[in-house]
Image 1 (tube, rainbow, N blue to C red):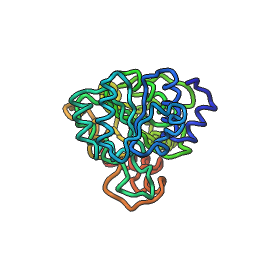
Image 2 (image 1 turned 180 degrees about the horizontal axis):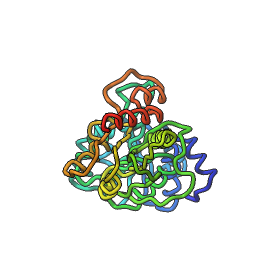
Image 3 (image 1 turned 45 degrees about the vertical axis):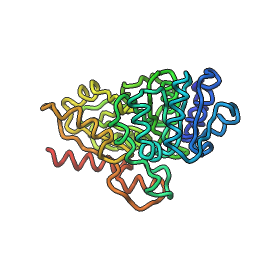
Image 4 (image 1 turned 90 degrees about the vertical axis):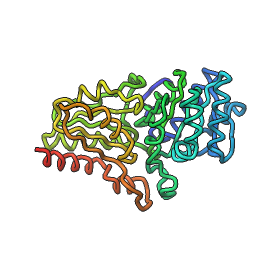
Length: 323
């Protein structure tokens, strides 16, 4: 894609699902091997434009997510590059066995796109919230997990996934009119965290749409003379362990911020990376904790303590406790 300020604004308005559809449609024009699959959620997945442009390259398997993964694996093993899209919880939980078998064990070149991650499904409630998907998928060998932070980041993830011959899970979060993290083109590499801010007191690792909230938190902390480093962990697996270790040394506090359960997500991945070291500071894991009453996106984010000011307050409180 030709990255312009106008495109960045458009992707922000579309949200991550719309950005995914736009990116895949453009890539399909360049690569006839790219196909898309939907579990009866073509428009919801942002694939309406893809379907109009390439009707013979979109397969709607109906409400049968496990079957969709099997079909996608067959298509991949025939030399194509399938992107199979459905809600995160239906992909990671309902089709977990098929992902384990075809992507983990057989290593078929399938790109599973889980949209509506975290609390994006708003009033649909806990049956549609995707807050355990990383935990389920991260336990499966041979899978790459990507979690973009904004619209342009989605484009980068989709392009990288199409280029890499490997099974990949792309987790889409947030809603339309989402905050912009990247305002211009940037280097994206699977497995390499991106430094958004330097800092000496605290280091914050965030993924998905709440990266924007972590940026706000870092700004609030800066106003109170707490210097926070911030990294976008767009690749959850394989985790950029080298960077995580290097930038955590000497910090008063290590913080993970994610729109996912505090069990099994990036906080857990960071903890697993640092647990054997004796030179690390305490780790504060911020994320979803339990099933809450349904509401709109901002309400759900607030219930989980993931607003910028809430993140900043939690960090300040933890620093007090550790000093």
